[in-house]
Image (cartoon, rainbow, N blue to C red):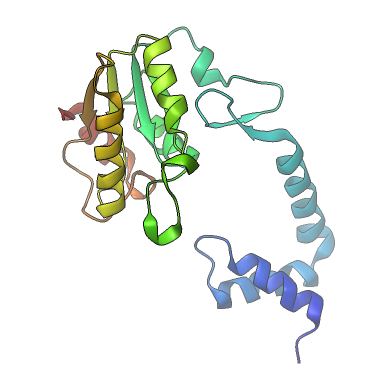
Length: 199
């Protein structure tokens, strides 16, 4: 019979990406078996992350509360004329690891998905249009998933940006169908960014 606190911990851990029920169970048991070595440092790290990590007010990337907007938005060496649109802040980390993009970013906070009740109003689309216009952006690179929802989101953005004067491009080759930026290695992302095409 499982104790409820351990069962609750297993349930919470199993909600993390990459942790199935069995892995969550092993992790939970390890944490309670060695609280001083594993559980206490984890609790402290979680508490710091909760209080200190926020999303950038401009691009939506991860940053700290004392760095608003984030370093990617304020770095003068980055081109302010190019914006790479991604679904999630974690996608920015993947693209940065490729070293192939020197512009700014914009995380939508998801993609259009009727199945998950995500409509345009739940994404950071209005903020994207405002940035493209106010920052005189010349190119918007859509680095979205190549599944049906990603394609629908890209089509919606293309329509939104008509008349802004910005060229809209998409990643070229390298991203497999039904996949996303977060699952791609740096070399694949670099090739995809280098070979982007206008839409």
